[in-house]
Length: 91
Image 1 (cartoon, rainbow, N blue to C red):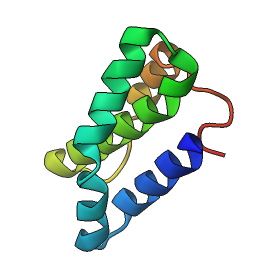
Image 2 (image 1 turned 135 degrees about the vertical axis):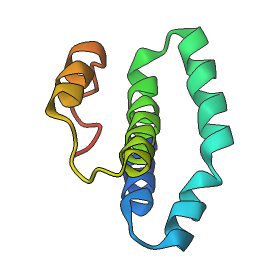
Image 3 (image 1 turned 180 degrees about the horizontal axis):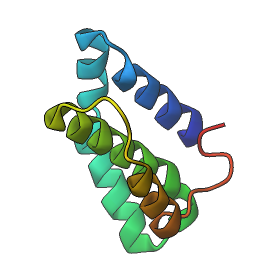
C-alpha cells in the first residue's frame, strides 16, 4: 500500500499545478515522522519508498532553486550507489 501512495504523491508533486504540489507538501510532516520511525526500527524495506519520495522532492526543489531544468547525471549515479531502493518502488 505504501509504494503506490509514495509514487502517486511524487507524480502529484512533479505536476505543474501549484494545488497538486501543495497537496503533496501537506503530507511532509507525517512522511518525515514515519521515515524517522522506520529508520530507528531498522525496517529498511518499508523505508525505501518514503526515502525515495523525500529525496525526489528535495531534488526537484534543488533543481528549481538552481534554475536548471535537467538532472545532473553524477547526482543520479550517487543516488544509485548510496540509496538501494526496493525493486518495485517506482514501478
